[in-house]
Image 1: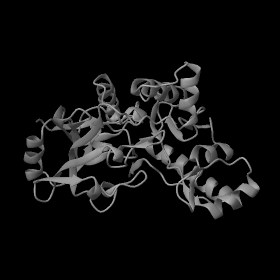
Image 2: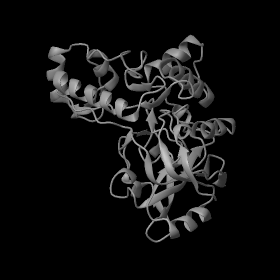
Image 3: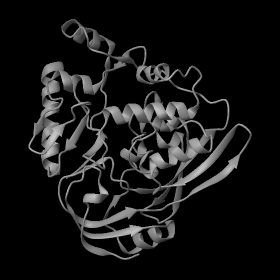
Length: 336
C-alpha cells in the first residue's frame, strides 16, 4: 500500500474529467483499509468512478477501493447466496452470474461501475432494482474501524436511494455486497417494451436469463455511449415522480407525455423525454453535451471540465422547471 502524489484521476472516473489527487492510494483488502483509517482521517473514496462528476482537484487523500473476490456462501437446489467484494466490476459480475445460471441481475447488465457502489443509489434498469437481490451490505465503520453489516431493510432502499446517500453517508465504507440469486424458477422480467421488441425480432418466445441480458446489452449499446469511447456517467438525472393530478394537468398541455405507474396516486415521467422536448437532445456546448440518442445522458466530448458539465446540467434543470414545473434531481454525485 503506497501513497502516491499528484495523480491524475482521469482514468478513475467514467466522465474522463482531468483532475488531480494531491495524494492517492489503492487499497486491495479490508485489512489494508482498516490500517489506513487508523492514520488517515480525511480522505475521499473512489471505486469505479461511474456515478460521479469531479469539478475540481481533490486535496484530500484519494482512496481507491480495489478489493476483489467473489465467494459462494451457501446454496440450495433453488438459490445461491454470494458475497462480492466492492472492487469487482459490476457488468463482469453480472455476466459471471449468467454463465453460472444464477438469475436475478440480468436486467442490470452493462451498468457501469463497481459492485461496492451498487447499493448506494440502488441501481436499477428495465423494471428491476438491485435491492430485490441484496441480502446484506458489509461496511467498515470509519469512527470505530469495525466491520458493520447492514441487512436489506437497514439499507432503507428507495428509488435510486439508500441510507448510504443519506444519514450513513461519510460514516461507512462499503466493502462487500451479498446477494441471493435464483438457480431455477427464474423471475424473468421482460415488461419493458424495448426488451419485448428485441425478443420478438429474434424469435424468442421463452427467454432465458441470457436472452434477457443480451437484449438489455443490445438496447443499452444502441442508446447509451460507451464510457471507454466518450466520457459519460450513464443517466445523469433521476426520472421524476409526480402526482397523478400533476400529470393530468401536464397532459392537457402535452398530450404525448409518457408515464409509468408508481402507485395509485403517483406516476414516473421519463426525464429523457422532458429534456428532449426542451430542445437539449444532441446539443453541444464546447466539449460538454447531451447525447444524441438518449437525452438523459450528459457527455464529455474530450476536454470538458466538470464545472462545464455541471453548468449544463443546471441549465437543463432550469429549463425543465420553467417548461413543465418539474424539478429534475441529479442522480450523479457532483463533487465540488
